[in-house]
Amino acid sequence: MNDNNKISYIVSPNDFMGAGNVSEDIKSRLTEMNVNAEIIRKAALAVYETELNMIIHANGGLIEAEITPELLSIEASDNGPGIADVDKAMETGYTTVSPDSEIRSRGMGKGIGFTNIRKCTDSFEVETELGCGTTIRFEVNLSAS
Image 1 (cartoon, one colour):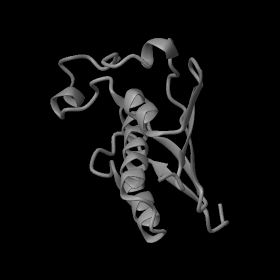
Image 2: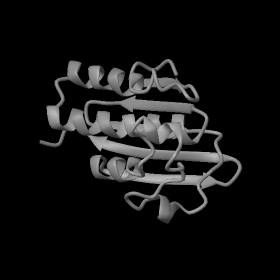
Image 3: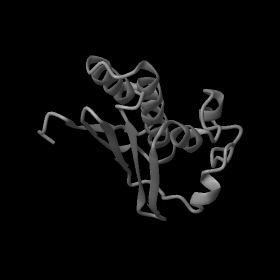
């Protein structure tokens, strides 16, 4: 994307060292725009959870962000396995990561990603197809007080 308020980020599979790079960049951009600190915190957390989900569950993917003075819009797409039961995946604590995996030993994969994204955004939707991948979209109102 070459529009100044649209940015694309590639999230690499298993890149735990790079986890947070996208959310940090978006946080910096919002800070430069003088967005309210609490809104920045929520937006950064939602993006971070999205990154982690892509790294842990989906072999990476693409995050596309559009930032206007009023709104942060995120679309995150992957070619992962898809989500068998979206309603179940929305439940706090539900995870497909096994308790003895390396991911759990890193303190991740606890089933709070979607919960945190929902809490921190003004709209949130999941589109998924088994064997084809998942796309999530969310928005954060940047002009709220």
